[in-house]
Length: 61
Image (cartoon, rainbow, N blue to C red):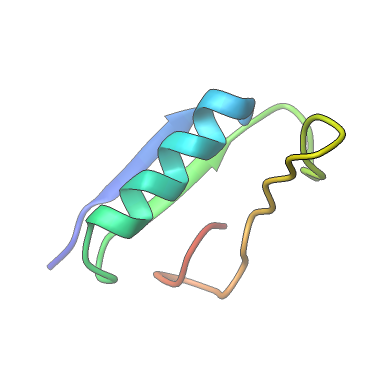
């Protein structure tokens, strides 16, 4: 049984941390990024990070 990991802050650090954790952990772990903003569109002009939504246990919510 996996764990539920909360990342507080959906800034560049939170998103990169979430992506790295998703790559390193098994799919039975939940990674939840908590931010004040409802939607996340990305950062910078050349680099964009998008949150993937696939439901419970799949990627980010």
